[in-house]
Length: 492
Image 1 (cartoon, helix red, strand yellow):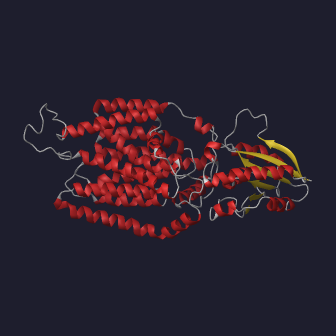
Image 2: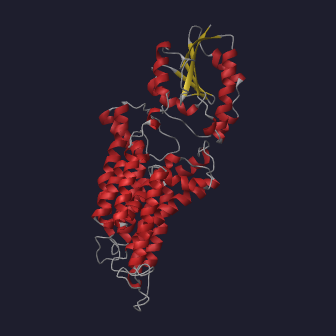
């Protein structure tokens, strides 16, 4: 069994939809590890038929099977299908948003086209999916930006007689989303001001390219996908006479006007629209994170949907080359990638090994405050939790409100004396410290945690009233763990 680490806490800087669903799910299935992770697994499994149905209407049966295969085996989705967090749900909504954009505002350009300027069924679907995404994760704002750019392009491409209806439907859809999202905006502003993402750093330009590698499961798969997209783009341009005619002549020689977007189905409109959703989702997130760092690879769940739709359509349009690329990509993905799962945080193991040494009333001091909820999930009940921020009133939640300022001004020596004095003689103190990995501790928050971890470790180790009982994992541990280590002390 993979070393799953559940995260039952309600993150103070996240919208509520996933946690509301999880609350209902837990009421029905319980809060065991299997039950908590099963919700994400169900969501990812549902993504596969949804990808098939959307791409069947957008690009035909070949695109539908490509989309289903990509969704079923994508490493990013596979990973977050095993996390009790909102990223699987975010990826699901991002897929529906990307598909609904073209189905709603370019119904004549898709494979199963009709004679309408817009398809209001999919306008409603777009609004619903975007609203769901916004209430799932704040990065949904960026796919909202990407969808607006794509819709603006489709408005430009609409026939003059249809443009008024397209604009009207788009305005109604986005205003409707704005009105229904407005109640959450004060909370969003408060979160941005009081919590933000103090552990994050501004991304480098190279991380724009790295993001595609993450979503596409590595450089090999990404290179194969790039070939399929290049071939698809060339074929669509050739079909429209930009680079030559498919019947051996040139459009220019025949006297016809070349137009990249001209044709009975105008498939390039859909191709470009999906590309715009993906590109501007990523670009807007990167630009915002330069101003206010809020960058994490797991947040790229918002990019998964538009990328899968774009790639599936490109594979379908690339003919035999696309089929070959699909097989290559799936071969890259088919190898079980259990390394990341097996090297997850060791919190569960540390808690289980520490539990026999603890009893109700003992104190758990955690120098990495956001680890408290998961420790509370695994440790016995009746323990008191303390962090450098002070006593923890509710150990099931990490309260990020003003946490950065509190951490930077947290005294060590005076609070250590208060901590030790609060422990009754004969009781125990469990000191929990993160295993510091220098490559991942460069953010403002993590840098402060690293410094406080060292300071607190020293003062507790040198306190004459505390006697070390055991250290977990044992010093003979052969592999440097990822997660935490604990030291248990007796109060003399």
